[in-house]
Image (cartoon, rainbow, N blue to C red; front, side, top):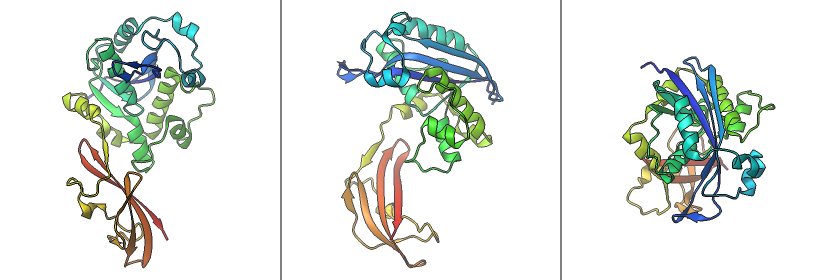
Length: 280
């Protein structure tokens, strides 16, 4: 499949200080985006502030991180016309959307629903999570997803002249991270933005900390030795602690004792066992 263009976008939003329809609403106040060609070279950018309608008071955290002030937002357009401009900028070409994690996708969808503008991103034909790709490229486990600034530093990307926590600059840095880490493996991270994609996006992972839960397979909770690869022997009972299970383990091949912690999560594709060991 040939992808006509990649679009990387980033959002800044204001955390709600009052509940709206029973929950706090993260209202978008800025959209920034970069269009890339097939070689991941930037060819165009989009950057707009958005005048809020629900959360009129900027949180102190947002003001400190973004340096966006109330006067700038008061002179901006509301969400609907800005989003219409963004769709026009995206165009009709076959598009793979790339973001740093799925959080911006989720927030954009919530804003579309809030403004009664649908529940899907019509400009997105395929999607890729560049944070997940970079994490695996750097050999980090699932519990150590790096932030954008940290990943850029690891990849040797200088951000001294960038205004981090502003939408356009964050999108530009994301594009640089993608290009720096890129290899053909990235293509396997590109998924169709179909109904299954939106179901997966809406699914909320749950930590299982009931040892008697029928979904848990006890045999899969035992880790392997990090030295020789043999299956460890459990030398104590699993003890629930901080939504995880602690136990002691022993490797007969290496004659080594470990303290271990296993976190069990129910994710969209099934049960995941996250295991950590400390040698004694």
